[in-house]
Image (spheres, rainbow, N blue to C red):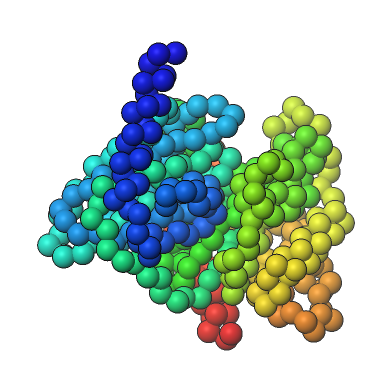
Length: 365
């Protein structure tokens, strides 16, 4: 107990001291699902959510902490310095920790962006300050895409570079930075937001018939992507030009083979997807909706999946208030990541397929 109190005190003093150096305006940019706290501290919640700042000098440090209300565990972020990916950083459980950042370029001003590599249900990452000599930062006006999906959209089980697939925890193999959405967004120069949860579907989840767990539409309006009413609601300030919905892999899944699993219900899928899109329109009526199939669902299931998507699109055929629903079809894939998921390389393939389609849509706006 004494050691815990000392650890907390050190963390508090460290965070307090660092907060002084960043008590400026226009010094931080945030992207994705984040919870802004006092003194420019922020909780990175969703996959690939980020905090970015400009600074001068050859080095600085950042203070990060893995935070989970359910259980203490480590977490991950990815660091991008002056536009170059430098590392995937493990944040051990416990008190806030200081991480040094070394600069190798001769530029007078540098930019550091800290991306949450893991997803919302892996807990949060607290950004609690920096020793950097901050300079002002402004956001560039770009088109915006929101990617709604499951573990594939999260970049889950894609990266075994630090921990082999047969070792560690599920979130040890996440890399949201290299998921197809962020990858293609960087390629076509747009801002992005990931609203995704592993295992979730439109009407049921990987191993649950929507009895014990909510589905994605049921948590979407909560900032933390849970049904915890004590958490804040999402503010919908992002205003995407395009909303991409890639849900269905888990609806079609057979589960673990132990828990009761009913046959896939096309009517439920179509009905829930229609209602979800209607909900999305209440928050972003001008957005272009794109619904996709899954590279993991093929054969007869793949045919049924496409039929469902066409029925969803047809349901809005007479809708004159919104842009016509678009359908995108990923090519079938044999995934090379962990637990039958796409690898980082597979995500690049998906990004190369999907990016030009979305860029064309954006150019038509």
